[in-house]
View 1 (cartoon, helix red, strand yellow):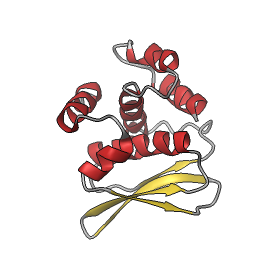
View 2: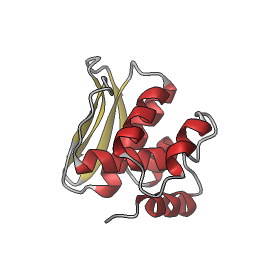
View 3: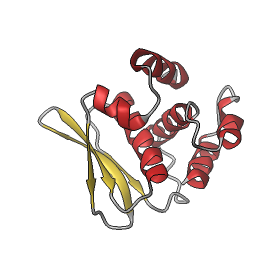
Length: 142
C-alpha cells in the first residue's frame, strides 16, 4: 500500500512548495491551458516519455489548482496511464487509481492557505480516509 501522505510530505519538503503549478514545473511536467469541452476539467497525457497535464482554460484559478493537484497525483503515483477529471465531480469513479489521485490531491491541498482548511482537515486527520468523503470534499472545494 502506498503511503500517499508521506509521499506528498516528501515532495513538498524536497521542492519547498506545495503549489501544484510550481511542483509541476520543478518536476518537468508541462501544463497546458486549452479550451476544452465543459465536461472535461483536465487530464494527464504522456507523449514520447514526457508528461503533460492539460487544464481547461475556462476554469477558475482555484479549480485549476484542484484539478492540477489531482492530475499531479496520477503523474506521481501511476506510471504508464493517462487520465481525465470529469467536470461533474459528483460522479464518483471507485477505481483504486482515482481514489489515490484524490487522496494525493487532498494531502497536497492541505498545505494551501487559500482553500478551506476545516474541510480538508476533516479528512486529513483520519488514518484511512474514506475515498468517497475525499471525493465529496474535492467537489465542494471546486
